[in-house]
Structures are given as C-alpha cells and as structure tokens.
Image (cartoon, rainbow, N blue to C red; front, side, top):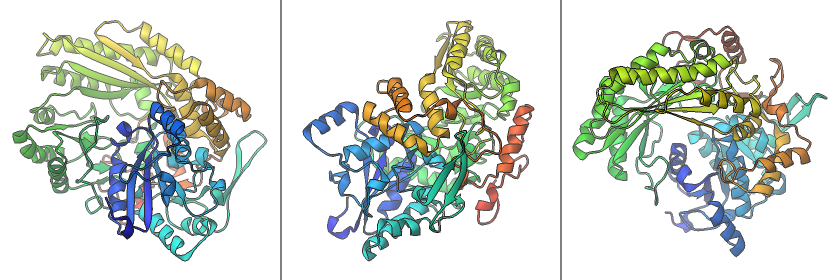
Length: 585
C-alpha cells in the first residue's frame, strides 16, 4: 500500500487468467516486488475475473479494478501483462475490455495508458501485435524498470506516444510491433519483416546474469483463498542443461545461471518465516540437476523439520533420481512421484534428446517402490516428430513394466498401486529445433489417443489425455503471425475470455472467426515449414543460433542425441549473452 500523493506512476500488473492461477505465478511475485521498490511507482495486481463475476460487473456497469487500491484499471498509467500461455491471449483482451480500454494499440493514441506484455509467449508476440504497444523479450526484472523509468520521463516531458515508442525500441529486449512492417508472399508465407524509425534489425532478449544479487521476494502476499500451488516457491536456477528438442523453456532461458546454496537457504527460511506457509517447493526446469541439491535440502530441513514444514522437489529426472534426497525431504510429508519419459520408445526419446533410458525409468520406479511409494505419475507427449503407432503402443508397454516393477519390488503392497499415464498433444514452439514441424491433425490425435486407451492392460493404470481441440488452437497461436489479431478479437467478442478453461473454450467461435477473416488455421498448425522460411519471430534473438537449432533438428532425424551442457558444450551461442561469456555450470 502506498500514499497516492507520493506516487507519480501507477502500474497495473495484469495476469490474464484467474486469481487462483496468477497468484501461483512466481514471475508475478518477482515483478511486483521489483516495481514496488521504485519510489514514486505503485504496482498493483489485476486478474481476470471468473465469467459469472464479469457478467455481473458488465450488468452493473462496474469496470475492472486493481486489488490494492480498488481503483479502476483504466485510471492507471501503465498496464503490463505477464503472458506465459498462448490461450491467455484472449485474457489480455478480456482485461482491457472489462477495464473500458480500447483493445487496439492504434485506437489508444495518447501516451497513457501504455499497454505492454512480457512472458514466454512474447518470443512470438505477433498474434497480439495489434493490441500491445510493446513487448519485453526475456527476463523482465531490469527491462520492466527501464521501460517504466522511460515512461516517467516521457510523461514529465510531454512526449507523444510515438516519440516514446521510438525511444523505447532502443532499450535492449524491447520489441515495438508498430515499428515493423510485414510483407507476405503469394503463398501466404512472410517475404520480409522491415524495421522503421530506427527500430533494431534484431531484438535481443534480456537476461539476469547474477541471480544471487538479483531481487527475490521473501515478503510475499499470502493469498486470500486457496490457489493452485498453495505453498512457498524458491527459484534455484534458470536455464537447463538438457536440451530437449521440443522444450521452448529449455532454449529461451539459456544460459544456465544458478544461485549459491547459502543464498537459497537464507531466502527459503525467510520466505517460510514471513509467509507462514508449511510447505516450500524448489523451482527450476530440472531440480535434480542442481549441483548442491543435497546440501540445499539439508540446510532447509534443519529449519523445516522441527517446525513440521515440508520440502517438495518437482521436476525430477528419472536418470538421476536420488533415494537419499527423497528420504530426506519426505520425513515430514510423503508426496507422490512424477516422471516425464515424454515418449514410450527409446528411438523416439532419442529423437527428442530426452537422454533417459527405459532402464533409468524402471530403476527409479523400483527405488521408489522399495522405499514405500505406491503411486507414480508418468507424463508423455503424443504427436512428436517421426512418431509411429509402435511408439504409441510403447507407452502402454512401459506403463505395464512399471506396474510389474511395483509387483516385484514394492515394500508396501497392502495399499495397492496407482500408476497414472497422461499424454499431452505436441505443439511445435518457436525457438526450438522443432519450430519448423507440423502438428498432427486433431483427427490423428484422437486416433492415437484411442489406440493407447484400447491397449492399456490393467485397471491399476489410469490414462488421462489432453483435448486435441485446445492444442490445435495453441499451435495456431504459437506459430502464427499478426494476421491472427483480428481472429483473436473476433473470438473474444463471440466467446469471451478464459479460453483455456474447458467450460469456456468454444471450438465453434474459433471456426467462425477463422472463416470470417479468411484464415486457414491448418496453414499455421499443420504445415511443415521450409528451413529457409522467414518465421514470424525471425527478428527475435534468444542467443541460441539458427545454426544450432538446424543442427539439432538434423540429429533428431537420425535419432541421435546430444550431450548435456555439463558433459560437453554444444556451442549453442547463448553464452555470449552473459557478460563473462560463460554458463555458470
């Protein structure tokens, strides 16, 4: 809470989904603290209301408001969105519309309000290019501050919006869509992306080089209701050593940067003390790859155990699962185990560079079952490049082998076993070696899901799958260009926000919107791209070179793996983003 008389800039930090989701987001917590540490700036939280609430607000003529002050969002200077999922694009429009703010950037001719977005989806911001004034590419702790300070200067000097955007484009990591024109070839592909008014030819992402000295929130807001991840979260490192070829996060968050163990123990204890949470979770893309994990667990558990606080370790890998560490963290409360083989066959795991063997998976399950666990969740992706029906059937076969492992080695068979197999639909993502691939059609996904379901051989194995309809739209938006902006606006007007929620997703609205705007969605989702095609995100530089992505794609075609970053540097190019030209590992 801040004194309005001492504030010259109001910042609405918006999460385009519900409170329960947004309050679980660590990035929101970090940016909230960073911005509120600025004197004269008041950052407040804004979330997308549930549909019944928004209907009542519309009926009563009540505009959307920020949580801290209760003031309408339309009265704020800056409106910043954190967008980590393509289906949240409609949530951006929902928040703007509920706030009474024009949806399109061109309709907002004044400097205030400034609308921008950050998050993983901004590596391809083109589908919402018509709605945002600028995008922050990469990590926002420093870039958001620089944009905010430039806005304060522009406001004080009376700049026009155009003058501000031209100056903002000079900030590293800032992409201003209106300063680029896109031309298209007769076949619908992009023929040129041209910068104007001094905008850079390439926009290079921002990274935080030293996480130990960077701001991390330990004095967080405790939610007013139960949220999805209702616990304290401690970020231990950014980046990933593994290089799974389907994983956008693994590529865009390079180079690897870890925190010192002493920093983490101090932050974790302080976080638990100030929040009152009784559980803390370690956050990273691959927690078991943190070098000092055992030392970190010991340091946290020395404080947690006497106070009956628990420690959880998500993002474990089957090839370095440590029973010693799991026994430590399960002293207070034993949780379930989750592994992500991603593919059923070894051939396909090699295609995606998972670098996990069937032996690794079964040995980890054996270790867990011998240690008293009676449940395991296995996550797979369906529709991966080069996938065959044999690869699908291999998922069922692997699940059955896990069941037999429990039967053979479980130390506690009285409670039975729960094996859950879940499959998601592969979505090709920008900035990965698979960005040129086509997604399976919805019909093909349904066929494969039925094939797997029909071949599950035990009632002890539960099979869950993700709807192909939503994954199809996700692929269209992930791979799309700015010609999709009218489609998104049309879908919002037909079906409203919360598009990712099953009860609000409308396949009909999307079909009608594509038809009305002359867009064939299969052009984006189900079309393989030529390797020399100009992609909508071609002007964005993540540090990872095009040559590296092409090399990894070629290796995938040969079902050959690449070593992880600790075994051998693959020369991906991301190290040049670090001031010292190295990854910390």
